[in-house]
Length: 252
Image (cartoon, rainbow, N blue to C red; front, side, top):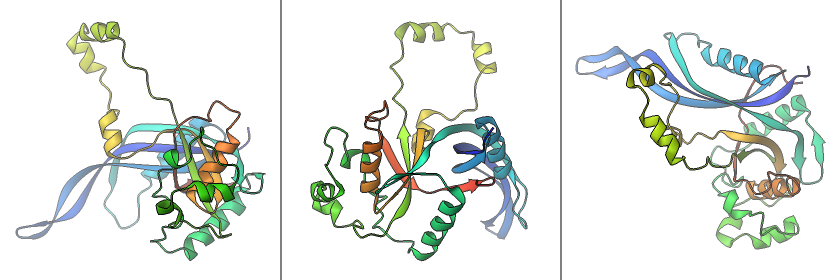
């Protein structure tokens, strides 16, 4: 099987002895916290991608106390097999892409807002109000958004998350059946998975599909995706754009 990119997201609980402040001065104490992270994992299959992600997460940094990790939920999403750009859709040459992206990060200020991660692109670029071109898109975007974005020839890399459809409302009959469960069995079968409210509070995204897009700003990236997905069943799905995340495994 060929090695391809998978987008893996994990929610986990960390336990570690850390130095903290006390009345008598610094002292070591056990600290427990929830965390999440995502990575592009290069592997032959989703199962292998999960294993590589988990192993990378558990790697212990030198000079720190051991950190125990309990994985609570892991999600793998496929990555669209093309780089979507303003001029064409290109094969994914990951070594070249990552080198170029690294150079961009080094030369881009940390407080750079012109990329537009602050824009709600799902609302700014609707599939039912599609601009004809990037030029008309720039005119169609409200001034308070347009004025803060980069419209020069400079290009950035964006990860676009296509979100899953919301779950259907629960069936009342199912709720009644759930209420008849034996409480002992229910406790034994309880899961350590995070609740929906926990996931929301951590602002974690579990995408259905992920696309890599090169564009001058997030609004253009969203427009390029809407055009790319126009004839697919993903066209009207909610989308979010995030920065390019770290990688695990060897890019090919």
